[in-house]
Amino acid sequence: MAEDRTGHAEPAQGRTQARNARVAAVLHATAVRARTEASALPEAQARPTRYAVCLLPEEDVNYPSFVIMVKYRGRGLWGVFHRSRGLSVDGEWDGESIPSNRVDEWLARHRFDLETALERAKAAAPLITVNGHTVSDALRDAQEG
Image 1 (cartoon, rainbow, N blue to C red):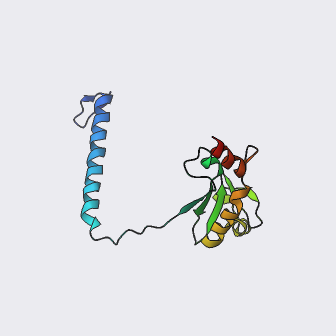
Image 2: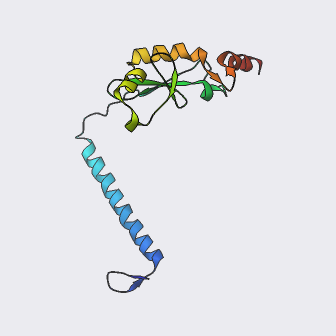
Image 3: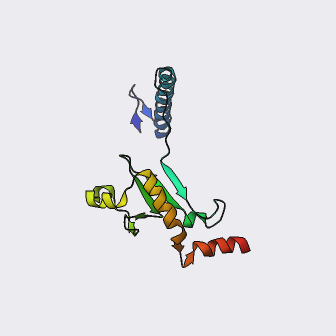
């Protein structure tokens, strides 16, 4: 057993409860401070950071497999993604490398302004295949099902 500040033995459970109480007090004080300071802050900004592009209706069971995501990637540039692959300027789906491995040439081939990214995503949406099934197959299955 560890000793408390008075030199008496303190059981582990008591130390955990005391630590939890200190953490709760700090969190409460921080929340009170945030509420107090909030009125002096500028208005929060909201901005879209991703768009979903798909020919299937959102409620379709196959929607997650066929959806293309257009995601904001900073500096006014957007990426077009199907699952973990990013669309390049030549229309090829390439594996998305980790940020520390991305060179300027790679970024130039896989980042677009928003208008171009949405255009490319819409153009690619009818061409998506998943496990040998096309978007047309998925739409037909939905109508028959």
